[in-house]
Image 1 (cartoon, rainbow, N blue to C red):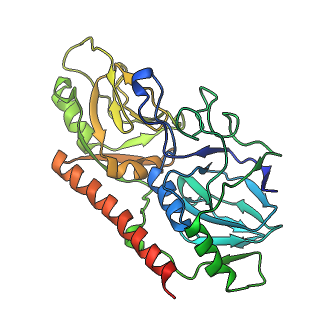
Image 2 (spheres, helix red, strand yellow):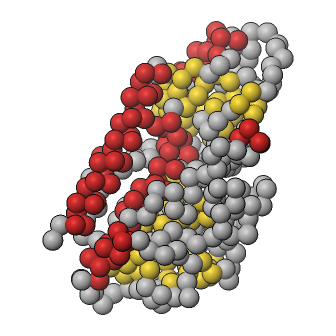
Length: 336
């Protein structure tokens, strides 16, 4: 008894927050493309922030629930419905046994997250349950979901049971029951189709021509359809070094804007390699990585330079919002 995959969707994988601490051995961090959305979906159910969930890309799967299951959806709005009735993001939902979750037209963003109470029960590989497709490890046998797969949830914790008990009290004769409460909109990510992403100067910024330094902050770049979990390939102004230079490979991370010799930037994403030798012109700040992940192919992005102090302030603010939401949910559930 679990969740049976009727249709797998375009690319649906099990993800958590990734593998940290192994980059010096060449193991990538990986994990969810939009880690904030995964954290918030887990938080709404009372899960640990790193609990494994489904990452659903653009065209979602069709999933049949063989037993009563507590879920939360977050991230991109992919027009989710249960037994044909629209179900909304960012709130706990009790899905009744025999119901089917499906997805329609992607409205905003690329990646939606389906968290289940107790997290998805798949084995840990190198400290994480995240699927890394290129290496064939993690998640469900190291691969994307297929028709006929059956997913199981882990053991629910005390907070999961509390959320569930509140929904059971409503005793609605419908395919699903939605919690009457949800987070304040200002605590949730807002995904813009053509966003401005805040960034720092990269380690090789001064090696680029003056025109290239102007272009990176003032020109729009289109996200090409060749983009994937490893990198967003951009098209727009051509960037160039003042003079050719041979660079040593150095550590790189999610959000690094690198420029290959032909001049079109690549923004490294969740499944990026651990080191890179292309010159690094900018670095998208941590607080804007969720927005970066949700930019759809053919849409445009622009970069805005900020200081390190501003980047740190925005990151701290984001973490404070998550902490505040966690406390609010705890008090809401314990209110008699």
